[in-house]
Image (cartoon, rainbow over all chains, first blue to last red; front, side, top):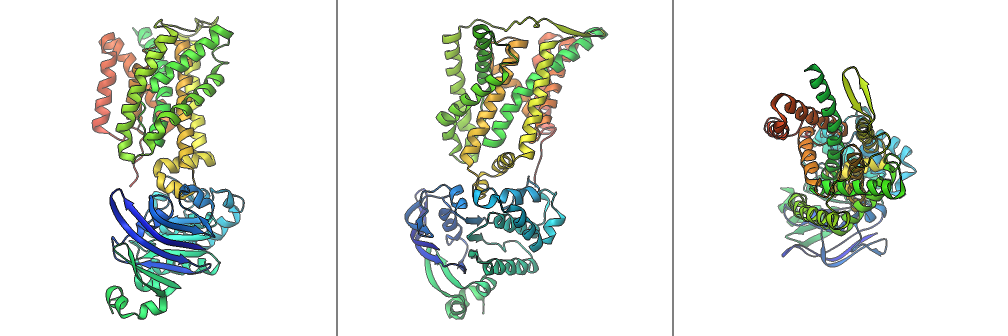
Length: 234
Length: 293
């Protein structure tokens, strides 16, 4: 479904991503692991058209995405939940969810979608008329995921969904991500929480200083001594 | 003395309504695009001439021509955005203010020069049959055209607030003002939001221009004076509340008017600037500004 080949991204003269290739097949969870500053977020932002792509190709269901404005990618079903504060602080929980269904593909079924999401995250139902900015970190991440689901994604991209959250909430969030995959939505996830990410992912890539240095099915990768040493502290 | 004070309270509130309406458009563009358009007063001036010529050339009543002025100035604003301000909103948020200041100050000079060239430097006003009518309440005279101006300002603020809080487009505008990147990731065409918001800002300036030409007068150099008042009002009110802007406008008008009575006419502007400095140092987010953690 999503295929990235030879992606190179630069901030002005400073190149950060060097020829990265990966793919996300239909109905699977793919995770990109790697240390801080490896270029994970940069890769995702470039994918969504928020940073200029120097070279390489990005195709989604066979169509090239290079040069498309961000809002049109959302229209095609690519939804990125950015790192931290993805929901709007100045909008209420309900308004955030409503706004999630902004695209024409998601507008009509939004009543059912809203009910479904409040079913997954009952905490949000209790806080419907509260401003996004008044939620706790965990609730705000739930709202971000709920808002993304309102857009009816085909591919959900998450940038460090566990960042700054308590372990028990992280566990809940990861359960929900696995459920989302089971409903047929593909997931691409960048994580530093390597152990948990490998547990739910089907396939993983390791990104270091802007290049893919290892990849494989998660079970193989978690058995790889290099990965164990560098990321799993075993 | 009582009569003088009551009369100046009323005239202060009436001119304050105008300050509020002018500030409404300025604050809207600033809040959404993070663009500081010091040519807002010149856009008002152009709107004033549109109303003036609609009246003199076609005999169109200035209140009937309000919708026409709104539409014409909406188009003018859209054009200015496409030709000039689009290049400002392409840059990072923190560079937008200084870039927009430079561009809009240039625009001030261009629009003033064009106005002198095409409309001459004469001061013009729209005088209708009802221009000098006034309602007398006790000791106080309330000129009807200025009163109508205040009503238009209030209605404009309420409609804008309704648009922002109750419509899908309004939610998109609020999301874009909070964080344009995240708005784009939500599927919002941020450039379209910017275009429409800037056009609405210019259309509001146009409405104010009509009412200024009717209740006061228009000439090519009135713009900067109105922009300055609007800037003071925006600082007083803070961003986030539309009716707060009108309230701050009324407050400024009242302060000026009472300063003129008690301290003398030459202190009118001084009072406004002192108020500006005091609010800026004590409550920089303004009376009604929202601060999010």
